[in-house]
Image 1 (tube, one colour):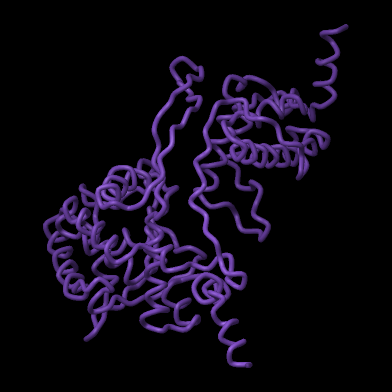
Image 2 (spheres, rainbow, N blue to C red):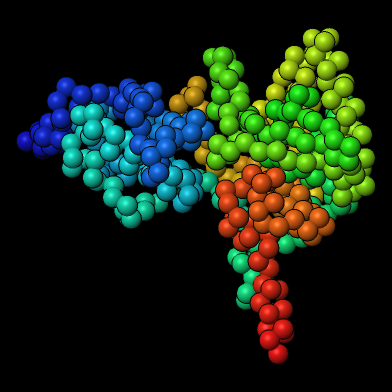
Length: 392
């Protein structure tokens, strides 16, 4: 009778034949479906988000792939979502598992009671694996009237740091290293937008160049499966931005950009750079985000003296050959100023040097709207003090 009780409970939960589906097959069906949970605005998940959900679900069911959908109860759900090393990873697991349960109910893998066992605000479980959270980046005091999202000058790399990083990149990529860094700081393309640019995206004027930002690199695209590695920029918004004759560091940007476009076309003719990319990977194609940062940005930024925090991480790491976790310890590095901070330098230069208005900055920078740029780059709080002084 003791053994029969759990079996009876499982049978009571089963929706039908699909209740017998192993968790591994269920996760595969969920990831390959066309109707996973959409965002609140009705837009389907991005490829990157779908890949993250797949990784989390597969991590959760390790060692339990054979369990069937009808065996899912709150105890098992808590065990699955605890398969992480930090509170954040447990929260991400909970969200991913909740989505699987809801989708599984719609497709008759789970009962309504199973689908509703992890409501929003469900009690958080403790991580079952060892992990070390990254330290928080250095905080700062702010003026009482300063917008919490305001980007100060010190939140962007200084001229000296830009030059130092550009010098290191020039050693790695003599054909275009400094140009890539200077263009990122001067014209503001995001990483994925910058490294897919071709010579055909640049139109030269007398005192500047107009750069068409029509695409970005799709981090979720699979080269082996023949996926298109480009997708629309963030927010599915294309734009035009401007590269100046000289950058904020004094670099002759326009001259260097023109020379690089000409060189890229020669490389295209020679067959070493088929798309005439301005900043091609060593084999002539586009870079991949994680390897680029690990192999190029991190060592270059360290050599350039960009500020960092280091810490020792202890975590449980899965080994597929033994199908067990092993505890490992390693030293990790976190940058106070990341690649994206060069986009902040672009924005601060536009506001502080070129006196662009919010609408103008939004247009060339590709932010969602003027509310975003007002919060980040204009509302320092000084305007309130100035209005008080004017009223005296």
